[in-house]
Image (cartoon, rainbow over all chains, first blue to last red; front, side, top):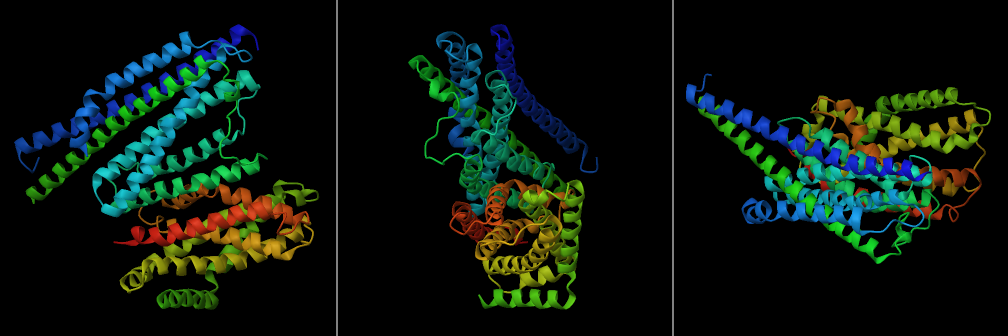
Length: 52
Length: 234
Length: 220
């Protein structure tokens, strides 16, 4: 395996690490936004009454 | 639990994890020398080996928290268990992806039935099922208990998986084993690199665990609020 | 403890009278075995016999245990059991034991047919063969019985039991197949010793775990 070839693998290896980490953080962000949305919905129900 | 750890977790963990990660990256790309035989690509090894800390910590925390949950029925323990599994799965996935990426240039094939990778695959499936089990938004309390049992049983299985997989691959099970490549750690700088990477992984794990735990705590709070409003409306 | 015996007795008597579970199970095993046979060249396939046996056993067994639990739940018999003052651990042992017996009977049939279809030689050490199968069936039953009740409340319920149990069964699969292979090749208890020991450990750990954890899962 030539030297330049193996650099691609090194790249891919660390790239994979950061991509997966970023995906997880995006997942956390998505959970947060869903929470926020539900909280807002809850708040509006609170203001307009239970039948809303 | 939240109140006790929040100050530390919110103020210390993020900068600590970030600094440790930067230090680890510096070590891996600047500090350590090229490995004699494998060359530059061997540098994947530092993150690949240390990520297992995150995986196993996550799973063990999950099992312990699950046991506590079954014993005391306090929801915080369930949040911790679930966070442990999710973050553990992240690191397990990282390990299973970086493993083949490292193996291909070194050993020539994408996959080897190396005992550690094999164990990682099995654990990955055990806890993937855990996540599937808990994929409903609002879950039945029965599901929560099943998940807890699964986490505990999964951890109990670990030594059995370890022994049987090693026997299966014809390896004599020994207490301490050297994963492929570790035997070539001749330069002390490499040991430092591995150490720093491992510390960085653990800190990153703790930070992500905390983030997820907080998310679950807030979600549970929201559900309880919703329930109270439902009741008030009736 | 006497409660457990009575439950076991009831299950077995019921099974003896209706033969419902056993016949379905045996038929399923035969069909899976046949599928395997047609997927291979049966002439030189004795090699594959241990693997075929245990894979067939596991898949048929999972379906049988799942089904039997669903039936009981549907009939309301399960709630009757829960209302009775039987210790939950003992209930687990009783359920596990009845599964072991039913699966054991089916396994005998499976092995006979396997020997017939794939030309497996008679074992030189029948005790070893017995041991492998007993240990394998016990370990499988422990895990499957523990998780069997899952197949009721979930959306993807039919898949849930296999999903839960299959990854955990890996050590059992490895050891049972290896030990069976050794026995098939003429080995004895001694030569298969290490595999049998791991199997036995597996059984002890998960029977104990099941006995302790079962009550967590069946409370209402």
